[in-house]
Image 1: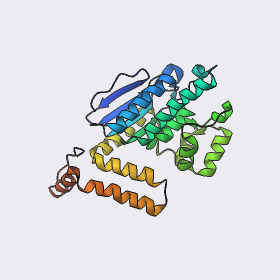
Image 2: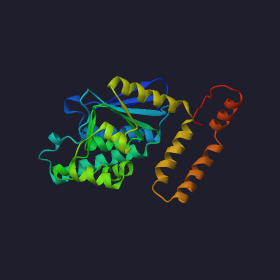
Image 3: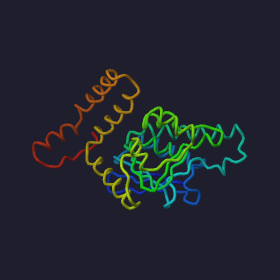
Image 4: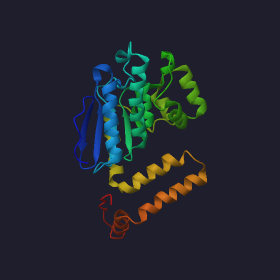
Amino acid sequence: MSDFPTYETLRLEKIGDHLLKVTLDRPAALNAINTQMGRDTLDLWTRLGAEPGEIRAVVLTGAGDRAFCAGGDLKERNGMTSEAWRAQHELFERSFMALLESQVPVIAAVNGHAYGGGCETVLGCDFVYAVKSARFALSETRLGIMPGGGGTQTLARAVGERRAKELIFTARPFSADEAEQWGLVNRVCETTADLLDQALATAGEIANNAPLAIRQAKKSIHHGLQVDLLTGYRFEIEAYNRLVVTEDRLEGVSAFNEKRKPVFRAR
């Protein structure tokens, strides 16, 4: 897939042949998730999951310098009927699941606050870089609801059960440094410019490696964590064996022996 539609709430920038920078683009609303953003992200993640084409890594960030994503758009939700709320949330659920299932690695570059569904979006990415001033929270219990974008599952897997319970029950915000200490964030950067540079550099490293191998490794890690160790290992071997017959495996070994950079073609 080389062409993307124009989205109302997302700004896409292809960098080189294999990288895609995606910006949540509602800065006046702190990039809050409204119904249209739900439609746009569902379409994007579904496309990347089904037909990534030349895209080998994605960096996801937010517009502006205040927020990555403030969560669900409560102005749009104000006065919404229960039926309309559930219908909208079904859309959001599908988007979150499509992000989790995307075969292309997604790096969150958290340029500002990530609250509620914004934090859950971060947790749905493969790993996370954050600017030092960013703050995180699963704040839903203050609104009479609870995390519904996978947060009770993904936060607990990232920081452990007891820490996740504390953060969700209190709805307490926490810093990027705390998030790094607890295992939610991989790297804290001093400035937004540094954040994007480092996230894109890491995405470039990923894109230089064999894309089929990356996708199979992602599947193995993602699904293996849901089962016991030996079952997960058997899943890993199944994923591994699918790579043995690929052209990329032949190219990787040939390039190593010929002392040159491999040219991977996802075949």
